[in-house]
Amino acid sequence: MTPAPDAPPGFETAGTLRQQARAAGMDPNYWYAVEEVRRVKPGSVVEVVFWKHSIALFRGADGKFQAIENRCAHRQLKLSIGDVKGCRLVCAYHGWEYGGEGRPPGVPYDTDGRGMPRLAIRTYPVKIRYGLVWLFPGDPELAEERRIPDIPELEGPGRWACVPLRFTWSAHHSMVIDNVSDFTHAHLHRRYRPFDGANLTRCETVGDNVHLSYDTRVGRGRISGLFVDHKRLNTNRMELCYEYPYQWSNTDDSIKHWLFVLPMDERTTRVFFLFYFESLKIPLLPVRIPRFAMTAVMKISNRLLIAPLLSQDRFALEAEQEGYEEHWDARPYEFNPVVQAFQEVTVRKWREHLANGSGNGDARG
Image 1: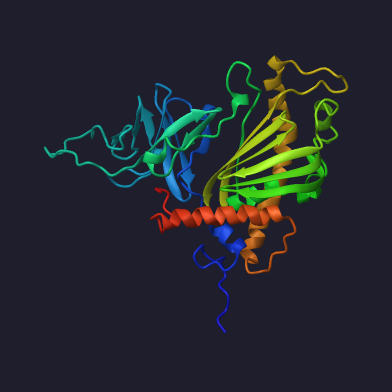
Image 2: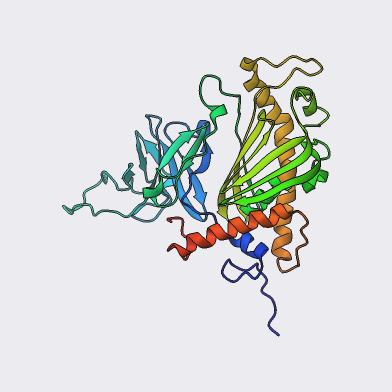
């Protein structure tokens, strides 16, 4: 009898839906949040990773962002260890410079009269929205067809306050999606009680989206609950959606969030959370916090309430990842149907991507 392999199977050899979901990447032909704008100052460069593909994201002196395959065409050094000169990214080794077209505009030494060849260094479309830098890792010809999710509450003069949160978790992206919409884990959050007593009332897959609803008590934490106007709002129901590859929730059109995941590899995911509220109230008083003060309140809330809450999810997900890697062949027992629905969409979308000509899971679409 052949012993079972020590490591979890890859996508093509996985025998169960869960194994396939835990090995799947994400379709690169979508816009993915990769960093907060404020964290990349003009004249700096950072490395971002989409599904095992390293990308150098840099910001020129003019404040504009560019993204390029993270290797110098000369000796293959990572360009992210270089620096930015004006609006060009300079390799740390020989000083080759890269601009927006993915080819050096000049080499800082004599080339012996030989012209520069056209270099196959890929560039990526970049956009800025909601305080985040978005990158399109797939087929660039599809970039304008795909839309970054529209969040009207975060745009215009009457926009709601929102301070993004971003983390890197040692867990597969499908585990993260399972976690944020499976409300059977209220026990984990018994201290903060973001939701409680959840009863699933809808789970429906429509195209590439999974819609679900819970009757649940929202925002009942000892401290956080004081800021929510439970008398004015219906905080006993929440709508959610896995809008592939994104996820969102909505409580009475007044308490909302979006989650944007950046899949880095089979066990690492970067997550960007946008929590935003129409208003919050002053604790113990039926008075709304003034709109001009909401951003300051959100910063404090992120630090004292939301980040610690999400840290509980990180702890559980990283433990789940370790458990899966050791017991990947154990039979899963899942009672919430939303988990299977999420995994079916994740697996189908990855299979469709591979079938469209990228059999090795390459990010190029």
